[in-house]
Image (cartoon, rainbow, N blue to C red):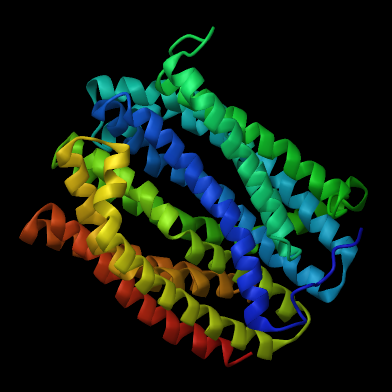
Amino acid sequence: MKSKAVLTEGPIGKTIIRLTFGMMVGMIGMVMFNLVDTFFIGQLGTTHLAAMSYTFPVIMVYVSIALGLGVGASAVISRAIGSGDQQDVQRLTTGALILGFVIVALMIILGLSTIDPVFRAMGADGIILEYIKQYMTIWYLGVPFVVIPMIGNNAIRAAGNTAIPSIIMLSAIVVNGILDPILIFGLGPFERMELKGAAIATVTARMTTFAISLLILKFKFNMISLAVLKLSNIFDTWKRVLFIGIPATITQFIVPISMGVITRMVSGYGNEAVAGLGVAGRIEMFALAPIISLGTVILAFTGQNIGAKKYDRVAEGIKFSQRFSLITGVILFIALIFTSQYIAAIFDKDPAVISIIVLYLTFVSAGYGFQGVMFITANTFNAMHKPYKAMGINAVRMLVLYIPLAFIGSYLWGLPGIFVGAGISSVVGGIVAIIWVNRTVNKL
């Protein structure tokens, strides 16, 4: 089967919404993956939950590498599909996956050798640090099963199919949901492993997505072929992917590194504050699923239409997506004001933790629609092969706005001030993104 440009024809709004809902199913599935972990670990107590919360920014660094490579692959593959060059599609997809394996080996070595200093620098010590070591030692060994499927799924989305990656993601949550209680609490013949068990469940679930994504790329879409890769052109393939992938990875890095700084600030308010931040972050990922899905779809949509030289569709698609994101953001803000108290109580019964979760979701959700606009803008720039502009959007929000405002807010109002800084940074960053991307698209 040849990969065809399916996003260059048909009604724009309906096409984007259809792909977004297909993507959202899988996105919600992956968020549920994290929420299931959080739910079961929360049953072990606040100390275990705090340990898990410390791992989140570090895991996001590694996920960011995978996402960056995936964005780089999707940006160039979608253009190749739009232009109708099937051999180039195979060369780029296969080369991106091989590049992923090379980078994974380095990631494992780096991760295992830096557990202690990295988490101590974030404020973890004592029993919490021991719990972190139990979890991360196993998680790092499973890095190949995290990175490669993300690259593979982005390649499938570049072909204009969001349903299959969603099904792949859902297979992971099923496996994880079954194994989590068995391995964490030691049900049946299995011993109680707590955080170690959660890590084993996660890695096993990721192995499922690893196998399925490679099989589908090879046999359904015919996007993998070693025959088209020669030593003389593999480095050229890597260069094309990394031209987008490196800035995209740096862009992805900005968020977890910034969140690491924020986590360090929040740790000064106690383990309950860190636990609350960790739970709120996972709830936030669930709430943002429609907006993140939309931004991911725009990468493939824009790439295929630029490859086909249909620039009017690009401009119309961006404007539609911006409106969709802002309206969705308002709905999420109102919904969370009324439901955050009840949602928080599902994950932790400690009143102090619940109050922090509610505080976070109340202030930060005010900027969700604008966060979506920034994500749309970044992926539009990547599809246009302007990765440094994409990097600039996140740098403005996190480094220029969020961290300075969080420090000021913490000094003036304590913990609530940190969360107020997050909301303001999203709104201001989103306004900048709208102006910047619309001017750039109009020049196509």
